[in-house]
Amino acid sequence: MKHRARRQWGQNFLKDSNLLNKLVALIDPEPEDFILEIGPGEGALTKKLSQKVSKLTAVEIDERLYSTLASQNELKHCTFINDDFLKTSWNDYGLGSQGIRVVGNIPYNITSPIIFKLLENRSKWKDAHLMVQKEVADRLAAKPGGKEYGRLTVMVQSQANVEKLITIPPDVFVPKPKVDSIFISIKPHSRFKMDEKMYARFDAVVRAAFGQRRKMLRNSLADFDLTKVKSINFNLRPETLSVEEFVLLSNKIGRINPVEIPG
Image: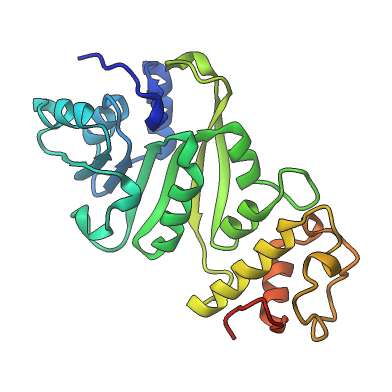
């Protein structure tokens, strides 16, 4: 059954069978894999993946699409949840608490919240393959020094490795988006050990630094005590610092009111 895409949910359905086969090859599913799919839409990718893995759960916010997917005989062995992914709990998925593989052609208007939710639960999944807007993919995978490098880059790369896999033109979607898309992979790493307080401190520093990205760090971080940080040139702008340098900075920076960061 064909469905009209709903703009409020950022729906763009994949229709190209050859491309879908390429995406499955990039995901490289194994028979023992547990898959969590975000936004299955009309189920084009769902059908191909479900034939190759032991368990697949998909979260779909659109009740029409959910009902159609849940009623298809070829998908009877899959689990479908009619809800907003951002409001669901990992306990809802029935996939266990670790080693989950995440896939999704996700709505471009909520890409960042979805990625941050994934990172908050990074111990539960081993990789994610997501279709995102090219501009966002460029920011996620950016290197220091470029205009794409910013808060999103630093926060995500502090927790995971990001790789751009394949660029997707608009004409393989219905309706066609106005921009190119990129299929990316995200794999959590543990290079930087941060507990909840350390991560909150890191977030506060990165947010302040890029909140005024055209200013030198000594100005954008004026509310912080920088006296204990000797290895950072505060006459530079934030986009010149590596993720490692931001981690070092957040570990050594002091607290000055009114800025409150965990001690």
